[in-house]
Amino acid sequence: MTDDLRAAVAAGALASDDAHRALLQATVDVARAIFGARAASIFLLDEEADELVFEAVSGEGAAELVGTRLPSSTGVAGWVLVTRQPLVLDDVQSDPRFSRETAEKTGYVPKGLMAVPLLHDERSLGVLQVLDRPQRSRFSLEEMDLLGLFAAQAAVGLELMRTARIARGALEGKGELAVLARVAAALERLEDGRREAGLRLLGELERVLT
Amino acid sequence: MGEPEELPAWSVPSDAVERITTRWPDAVTRAWAWGDATGAGVRVCILDSGIEPEHPLVGEVQRSVVVSVDGDGAVTVADDAEGDLCGHGTACAGIVRSLAPGCELTSVRVLGAGYTGSGEVLLAGLRWAVEAGFDVINMSLSTTKRKFAEELHELADDAYFKRTMLVASAHNMPVESYPWRFASVVSVASHGEDDPFVFYANPSPPVEFFARGVDLRVAWLGGATIVSTGNSFATPHITGICALIRSKHPDLTPSELKSVLYLTSSNVGGER
Image (tube, rainbow over all chains, first blue to last red; front, side, top):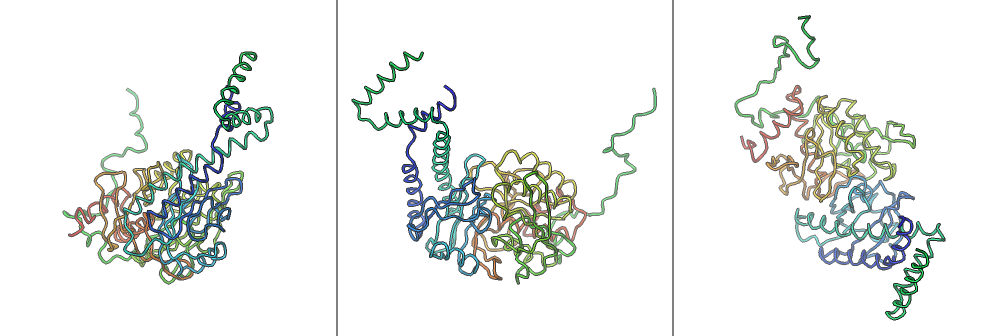
């Protein structure tokens, strides 16, 4: 099978974008719960626009933020994305520029944040942020380790979503192959009896073609 | 037999060996290593997001430049009036200043032109800094792109042979990243104590030293300060200590400087 055909069939059988969003949403929800934070969010790098896009938000500001865009190499998220280094900041309201920009975008100004790059293989895919964990005590290196572990999980989710989008995008310009994706997707959705009938039909088609 | 073959360029007859003036004591103490030093005469480069001018915790910045690379790979290094686009470079500069108040600081901004191409900008910035012959370069950043690893490695070695100490943040996430893993640089991760002069040698590299990096108050944008955590703040502590040692012992090579760091580490001879 050629790569294009393989991609066509795979794209049809891929989980939908909604399913990937649900995975990212679950990741930020759990991150927020584990750290007892007011909010958590995942930014994905839009390589074409060279911008960071909010893909999933849990907690404060959730409804308004998804889809919001930020520069990819300025501010705290940009620094974390480019340098691949996690960063924890507390009392960030003392930074007037940070407060103003964030407030303008989100209507919510955090007092503290943890930001960690989402790294998959050699790619920097985005940034996971956890906002306003309780100021109960000093930040600990264990929390930093936990954040890193979490980021590894979030990066896998983000990578799945990114590659799925690429596969779907690749098919849009290839009408003759997109039909395979649609057939594969239709088969996925059929109930058992009809799916068996569909597969038998495909088997006959395969015999004719080969 | 003909004429004796000419010696390779890196061999030297024993009567022509250059005398080295540094006298090593029996025990290398902190008093010997940096006692009474201020960092005066030492040129430190902060390769980061820029440095905010006239921040009270940073003071004078000798020069600020911004690095850019166009689509054809042409590098431009220009004077930079943008200040700091994140706050992080200012934080690092403030930490170095607090430890080595007499050193000269130069900002090389490698952030702000977008994520795409940021690897090329990082390389170009480091190359400029190595060619400029700084005594210490603080790199609280890394790249995971393998295509840059070889070039970074060569640059790190160039720095090493030019007596430029490259101090780089280690990564505490399970990925391969550079340049902190190279033997020619000093790599730094965090410990959780409050004393800026407490640093530990790691008997199990690749991370070589642990310095203060948890819950510390650092300089930030708008003349302000914030409390922050990260290996990227541990790194300028070691940069500052390197500046102190360099100002007292300017002829030390990077390998000797690293040995002095080791011998004065809090878990080696730091109490002496």
